[in-house]
Image (cartoon, rainbow, N blue to C red; front, side, top):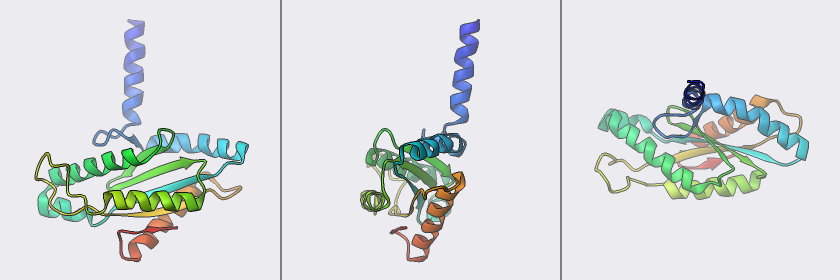
Length: 177
């Protein structure tokens, strides 16, 4: 009975930190890990970069093709993204059609190059061939930021989010810092 309770507790805790659609960690998990990553970066003097990723014109998927197609597009994007990052990178479904990625030991110029590679991998994707739900090409915009010395926990996310908005205002399907 004790073992079963421990397993159920662990399962419940894991489900509280996991997005059901993508299988990625969620925003709550990011908040708990951000403090750890900030402490590690400060202790080691190592860089920490963050990517904020948004699916361009996502409302079109839901409005034109329905929410099932929108969910399918998010699932496809999350699978392509997962393949582009290292195991040690922290991938999070931040909310809706936004994703965040923490890149330990990565400087801003490297993060920009990674961001551009990821953007190209997704640009124009229309599905994986298993169904015809996705008929609108998928594109992403991305904001990139690097942790500044002495910065607060939220400043890295805030800076990456501001860079994401600059990418959106620059015409979408782009990476900005």
